[in-house]
Length: 98
Image (cartoon, rainbow, N blue to C red; front, side, top):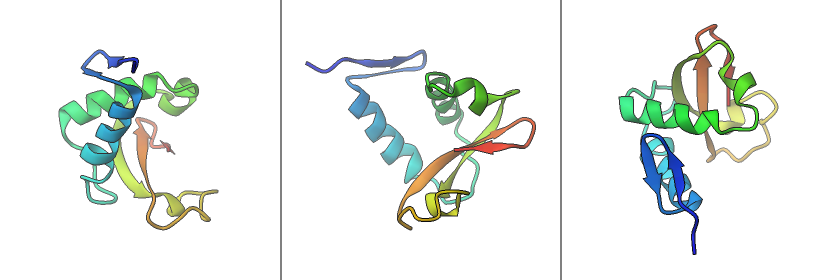
């Protein structure tokens, strides 16, 4: 039996269901290098980011916005396949993290 994945704004039947939602509704739904502007997507990504093991470092002084980037364009990830995408967090201090 799958364990539900719960964040304050949404409940998914499993972690896989949440990953599918991120992939289908966010990662591949937004054009590259454009701000993820839907308030519900921003809220959801913020909540999920808070669960990350490196959340404090990634969030830093706060989240300004998120956007989608091709993974191979990220420093240190140049060898990743050109069809891969990542969600980037832009912090209020202007720094970015994947």
